[in-house]
Image (cartoon, rainbow, N blue to C red; front, side, top):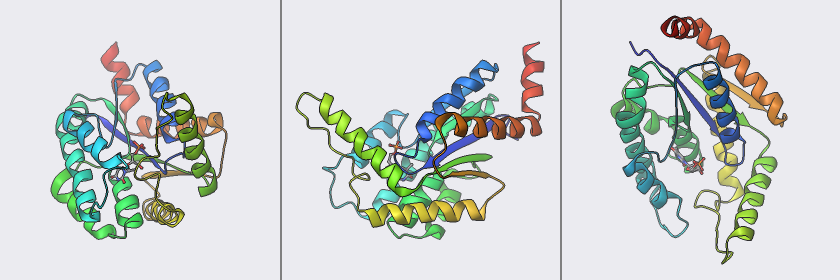
Amino acid sequence: MRRGFFLTFEGLDGSGKSTQLALLAAFLQQQGLPILVTRQPGDTTLGERIRALLLDAKTTGVAPMAEMAMMFADRAQSIEERIAPALAEGKVVLCDRFTDSTEAYQGGGRGLGSAAVLALHRVLCGDVQPEMTILLLPPLAISRARTSSRTAQAQAISAKGSVAADRFEQERLEFHERVRAAYHAIALREPERVLCIEGDPSIEEAQQRIQNAVLDRLRARGFLQSISADRT
Ligand code: TMP
């Protein structure tokens, strides 16, 4: 049995998940918990290369199946190199995106369906599953507006003004609507695992809900006790 605790953050681009992940990571560290913060795609040598290829708007004509396979290649590497060792060491692993992203973006957005994603997960990721997932699901208009203003800001500070939206951000509204619907379906299917934060709460309000829910879950797993025992 794994000693650590695997927690994932999910949501559309511009949903605020990375901000919330960073705040939670700082909070858990203050509690004295050993943590690993990681993200997908990326965070391994292979993964950063896969990320650059997949996000680059100049990578055109990618077959949806190839895109899904590359997401899983990144994930398999990340599990082997980063996630499984950290869990074996008893760490709390906070991962920015995991297989729910593939189910939402490739399964929903690209129309490949959930069954193919879940089958690949079984083959390539085995039993590595998040015990808890924080899903940030603001209205689409809000996440889209945040992504556009981020790209505009990046363009303004880039000398050549050449920063473009990435390959996923450039997708049409209908693509993002399908991604959002797929996320919603995952939350309905697995309410025990997924804490879904809808609407547009303030950063502080959302963080409070996340901290409370995560602490409850860590306590229920006996995690906080075992950490304080380890430290005494
Ligand atoms: P990020 O900017 O949040 O790190 O995400 C990178 C992009 O990759 C984001 O638009 C979502 C997309 N993505 C997928 O399409 N499928 C996946 O399995 C993952 C992990 C990310």
